[in-house]
Image (cartoon, rainbow, N blue to C red; front, side, top):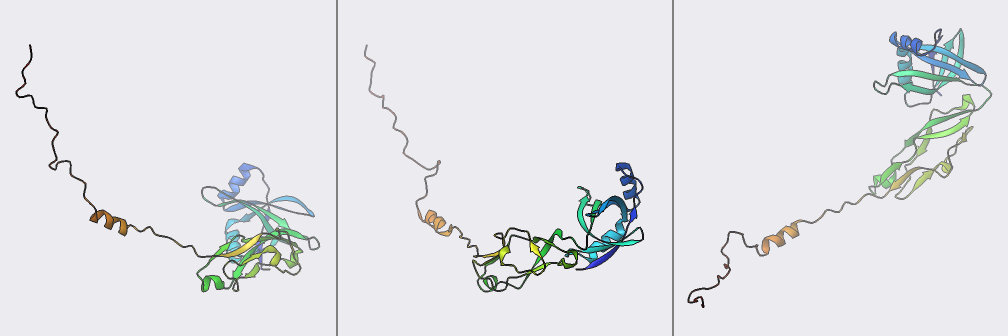
Length: 226
């Protein structure tokens, strides 16, 4: 598990006004808590947090947080973002106990190219991107590897197929992680034959063409009888 350092400080003011002022000077309001720690409002520099997240992108990191002269091992429990700008507004940091299991989700990494995709033109359908687990803090995996290289058309991998050491899997065992589906066949409508039949068929008479006019009733030779 990759560990990255972060520096935090106790937050003096609380409430929306104090949080807004912190953001204006480039700081992120946050809270620090754990199974043996009461919630504590803190702040971290937004530049430091962005740099740390880039360094651990794609993993499930543990941060070594420097706070009040002590180094504490924490993970990010929740990040709140502005719905318009996507800027981080607030973070929940959870301090881990060395002796108590922790409940979290780890990313799933797929390795290999399925045989069904490579040779038969199948489609790899991924149904799960994360796996819910519980384990001791020092046993947290960065990710879970799933080898799909031997999968053919119709083959799949379920949660129950995974074998992980020092980890208890909480995700439902019957859930499908990945499946290889048969290629989709697109049937195109044949319009050429229809058009050809129209060309060879009789052409409907034009409205302006000569047509037999309706016969007018002959009135010549008829005299009104009195």
